[in-house]
Length: 160
Image (cartoon, rainbow, N blue to C red):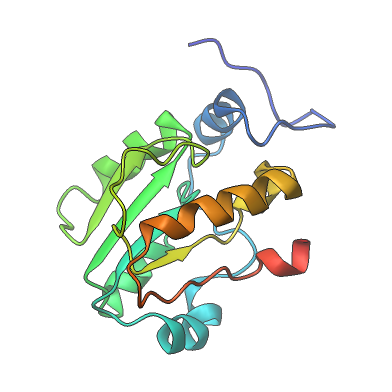
């Protein structure tokens, strides 16, 4: 895999898997965009029950899912466009059955059947997608939630 140095770039293509693969190779430590779980915990706990089937989109190498499992959450499916990030996280959490990791582009969620999740959490994916496209994806994702689902789109609305 040919990687480019992303540290000196002035413009980034956040929707490009190669950008993220390169970044995760160059910066292997975990990184939580915007806020860590402890700051968001009151809102997450209020909106999402611990028994909810949670979809964490654009998970990267953040530890938010780990923190949620420590807080009692039972099922979190983490997805990201970066193969490097997903492979890294699969290895790191191979002994944590409450967390699953899948490499995929959130613009194509056809892998999941309807009503697969009760809640979705996305702390940073809005930076990767143009706002109009993001709203289309938001609408499309709603078909994957059960009829009584809680949707949690933290931080994103402040970016719109």
